[in-house]
Length: 122
Image (cartoon, rainbow, N blue to C red; front, top):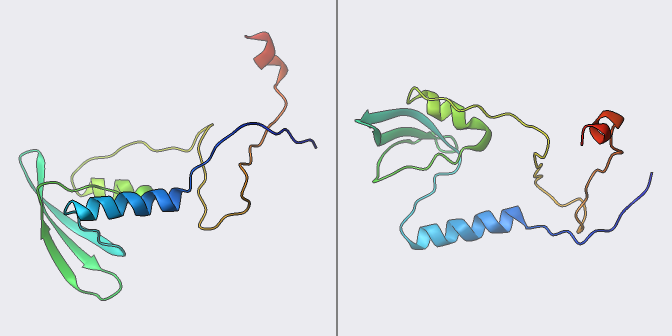
């Protein structure tokens, strides 16, 4: 086992999200946390309204807007299916993992020795 110090950088993804959300709210955006989309009303190629349920209170919501943003992360395809759409999402080499707490204040990279066929094919 060895360690290498490199001039790497990192962002605080939680602070970035919160700052983006605050800016969006200052421009009229509304966020609905812990809310499940039940159905979409589509007209032409646009979402016209969304029927949803607040999972914390049980309140049913009907929302109309000029545009909607699907910021559901791992549940994106669940919402897209309501519009008859699907995107292929797969974790692959280079994928990042974001956790709900910091493990360290440094960037950690997992380095592994190159494989022989990788070296000979370059």
